[in-house]
Image (cartoon, rainbow, N blue to C red; front, side):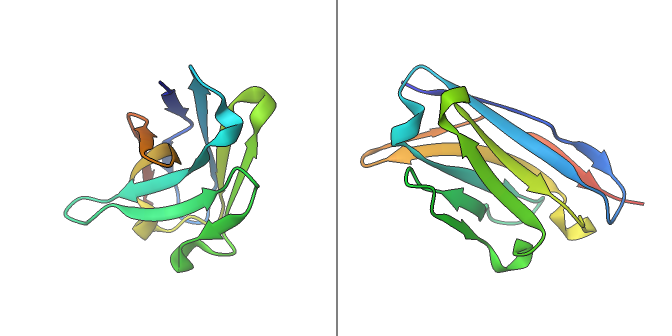
Length: 115
């Protein structure tokens, strides 16, 4: 069993930055592929960024060059550094951890980008 707790969301003006954190407990974090999804009102949940247990990263086209995902297995934590934020980045951001036949989700953290 893995528990995921997100933090770092909030409100920011366009062009600003936020750093989301997701800390895991209850299992061996290093064996999981982890990442972030987001869901905006009235839209489907979309994958924002992912990082495998081997630290291979992938990003949605809409955030490439602006967002950076990283992990520290010793701290059981994955981060999402979000720069040059845009109003269209406004959403609830969810952390996840997955391995074959298993997935876990955090409770979500709100990110609002508005002037």
